[in-house]
Amino acid sequence: MIFGQDRDELRQMYAHAWQKHCEKGALSPLETQISQVIEDHPEYHEAVMGDLEQDYSVDGGKTNPFLHMGLHLGIREQVNTNRPAGIAMVFMGLTEKIGDPHTAEHRMIDCLAETLWEAQRQNQAPDDEIYLERLRQL
Image (cartoon, rainbow, N blue to C red; front, side, top):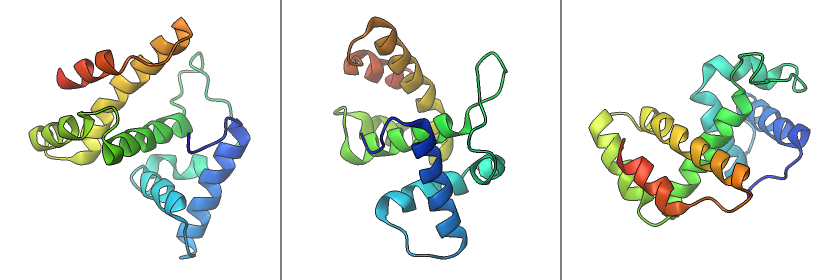
């Protein structure tokens, strides 16, 4: 895992990386990845630079920008490492079909989120085969 599990720490990491990016400061490789995802989501810039303690509950009907961007980072890490095996090819094929890597990631995020939710609900590791099958059906 590239981050800790503390929500405030994670959100602060996003804000810090974005601030350094905006100030043209030197970024670590992880900060570069984070700032690229934030840059891809101008609709979340305010959230990253605003109240980091805001609650984005499902009941409130708001998308959690930090969760969304974290899923992008997860997809990018999976594709870059080809783990689970075969995901890089799935991504390349989907990107070719759609014509835009960011949109391809958005489609893949739904599969990742569903797979993670099921694993959490069942208190077990995510099932890579089910995940890859979902991705192949996109």
